[in-house]
Length: 102
Image (cartoon, rainbow, N blue to C red; front, side, top):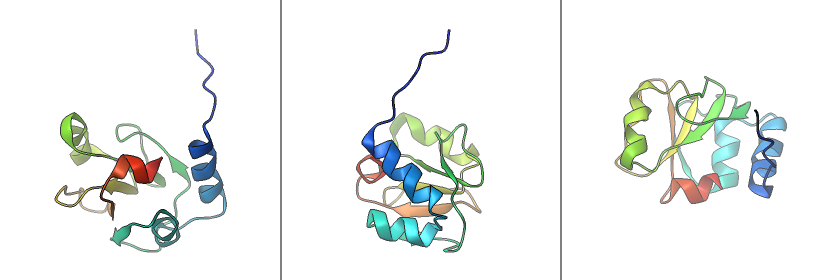
């Protein structure tokens, strides 16, 4: 049975940001983070690292989630300094990626 999940205000903020035709640059500016990569990449959704596609924004703080980073298909990932993203993925550098994502 599928469970219904209510959207938080944070989810609604990110959805609104993305529905406004966000680029990586616009998203970085709104979140107050530094962009490393293609500044014009369009973002159309938000997804976990293991389910993200080329138009999705995701995040990784490191730890156990870092093992998913090399295989992610995300277009952009919020990551801390020192955590490398795969070739072709835009890194959005944040001191605390989870806080920036929320």
